[in-house]
Amino acid sequence: MIGSVSGWRVSLAVVGILGVMGLVVPGHAQLGPPEPDAEVTAPLASPPAVQKVVPADKSVIQHSYAPLMKRVAPAVVNIYTTKMVQAGGNRIFDDPFFRQFFGDRFSEEPKEKRKQQNSLGSGVIVRADGVVVTNHHVISGADEIFVVLNDRREFKAEIIADDARLDLAVLKIESAGLPFLKLQDSDAIEVGDVAFAIGNPFGIGQTVTQGIVSAVGRASRSAAGDYEFFIQTDAAINPGNSGGALVGLDGRLLGINTSIFSPTGSYAGIGFAIPANMVERIVDASDKGGKVLRPWFGATGQEVTSDLADSLGLDRPGGVLVNAVYPGGPADKAGLQVGDVVTELEGRLVDDPATMVSLLATHSVGGKVKIKVMRDRKMMTLGVPLIAAPEIPKRDETVLPKGHLFAGAKVANMSPALADELQFDIMSKGVIALAIERGSSAHRAGLRPGDFIVSINNKPIKSVAELNASWTGYKGVMEVKIKRQDQFVTGTFRQ
Image (cartoon, rainbow, N blue to C red; front, top):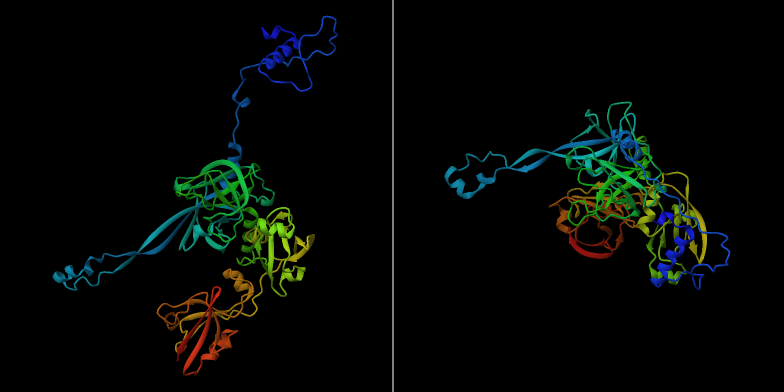
């Protein structure tokens, strides 16, 4: 038996087998039994015998997340919304063949009816006094919102903050002493961390799935919001999980589950959650009137590709090559220049412009953030003040009146605040068309939302007031120049 053989003989036997297999042990030209008169000073020790025993009880082998789920699951709620939508009526009475026999006696039959549409999702209680966070797309357009707790109590909720760009909303229910989840610092989350997705998939009731964080700072092609800086997880997320909790092993909220990536529409192993630091932003905003003030960088740039990285002296692709700085903006005040490459923001790598915008969005207005910049192949650190985009000039939203060539168009003065809101180039200036009434003079003239009215009869139009004044009382032919995306279009009109 192997157990009765001395340790060095066992080792030599193993080595002998390795020799037969053609394996060489480094440091030994030849291995074999010791010479008869050789002194063995340190025989190899035998591995300790492993004692195999039957477990005394199930506590020895039981491994479960049940205690954690009992603590955190009550803070995850179901959300039901209702809204009235138009439904097509019975159009058979409009059929000419039908009317040959029955005439107009059924002409008062309504052509459209209203019906109630229901939808469902999930939410997370983040304060004991009934503050609930969910996705914007869960409650968007709802006439009524109901929150159902884990203990089946039901409350009508009101919206106290809502931001489509973050795809987050904050609700308030009238209750107190509720279980809630504390927020984790999502900047500390790492790939490989254990994560649990809790929500109400398919309306079947609360469900918990478990996985790991499979990526951070990931963009989602199916995300509803504009800020593409998500926690990616392989914990199963399905329809109805939207607005639910992604929780870590410490029971803190890592993020709000928001979307999945799937070629079929069903779960395919990739889900996305909005980081808790962004959740904290909108919760704070709900205490200040519900308006989310986003820090404005005041500069634009392009992603640094491999070719650009070589020419700029960077050791890897990544970062943002600055190509425009708004005069007097925060980047300008920090000393950023065209041609600089932003590589880090508060110690986090900046891979592209979307990453930089999303990293900035996790901070509140006030104070400064540090950015690492390469200029002339030298690295430096700059402090960028966290300020909101200014509305200068005032937008002065105006619907142009009847008699104007562009009557029926809602126009406004472009400002950094409006450019940020509409996601336009921050250097944009002038008068922009925000909306066009269908069938109006503006619509017939070919004006479209997003168009800039640049000039009339070669006179630059810099404000809504100038647009109104340029047309008032004028008769004759007018030449109008429009900027549509990156192209200029000129039209001739007769008033």
